[in-house]
Amino acid sequence: MNIELTVNGQARSVQCEERTLLADLLRDSLGLTGTHIGCDTSQCGCCTVHVDGQAVKSCTMLAAQADGCDIVTIEGLAKGERLHAVQQAFSACHGLQCGFCTPGMIMASVDLLKRHPEPTDEQITEGLAGNLCRCTGYVNIVAAVKTAALQINAGASQGARS
Amino acid sequence: MYPFTYQRATGLAEAVAGLKADPQAKAIAGGMTLLPSMKHRLAAPSSLIDIARLAELRGIRRDGNSLVVGAATRHNELTADPIAQSAIAALARLAGLIGDPQVRARGTLGGSVANNDPAADYPAAVLACRAQIVTDRRSIAADEFFQGMFTTALAPDELITAIRFECPRRAAYAKFAQAASGYAMTGVFVAQFDDAVRVAVTGAGPSVFRWEAAERALSATFSVGALDALSMPASGLNADQHAPADYRAHLVKLMTLRAVADITGATA
Image (cartoon, rainbow over all chains, first blue to last red; front, side, top):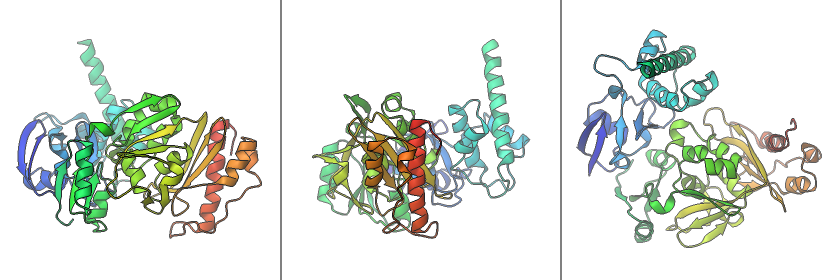
């Protein structure tokens, strides 16, 4: 079957099987291997991408279900060389160790910061409940989300003044 | 997953006709249970009929003393909806306890109710709130709808279009989540109406059920103290590696106490 979707701002038309998962379409057909598949059973959240502005697990969605949708993957966050504030914060706070869960953590964090621009620890924990990290123990991940929130809010208020 | 054909239905009648024409076809909305089941080859439908975008299954509205929620309403839509929050706040909060944020962005009310997982959250609210399950052809009372583990009154080609909840005067849902899966080890929804109290239990038994002894006690006196003399019998309750039946029986009373305490402001 043929799927038409927008991926990171670009209109794409892709041939795939009916049973192709969105995660596999992104990785195998479009070469966007930043979306990781950790468990393939919707537990770990490594495959989190945004579909029409909401974080979803792309291993538990058919590519066919995404026909006509607007998709953003980890590759679509940075503006050229400039990393997204959440990417910067994960780097600055060492919010990762092996890095496998990081693309999903970052996509879920961007989603949770839209809902909670000034998140409490509890809101961060709840917002990342669908993402597993087996290295860090989450302390630096929570710190990274808080740091990103401060940077995003500072940027927004600076933008409002100028 | 085994191969299947996929079709996005353009209308409810077309979706129902598709299910009627092929007994091996399945409707898919969010797919949060169906897709994992297909990956595990527990389900192998010949064809998926996507009903997620059908206009007939959308919308949340107040109708007199009822809250009518479209079957394709996603969990996070119900949680955030102001009409649902003001009509049955406990239902909106319950939706926010399902799965995780990514699952709540995809999973639907109708899908969860049609699946009738013994540990799903929604069936407790549906049964406690004297809901009517509205389908493409009839309306079914919750008391007749849930018939056993993963079993409902739905015909194979019948689709839920909406759930019509009766708005209780006061209500609360208390959940003891299984730590890894987030499913209800036991969840209890208590709804107080002018003429009755309903106590619906999920996670503890093979299917959602009403704890009628608690309903009688709370109808006489709506307080945590009214439950003092009661205990839930363990026979017939679920037992697995996470919890034996007597532990679940204990949780039924504890969650009931917590829900009543939440409503009355007492401590459980």
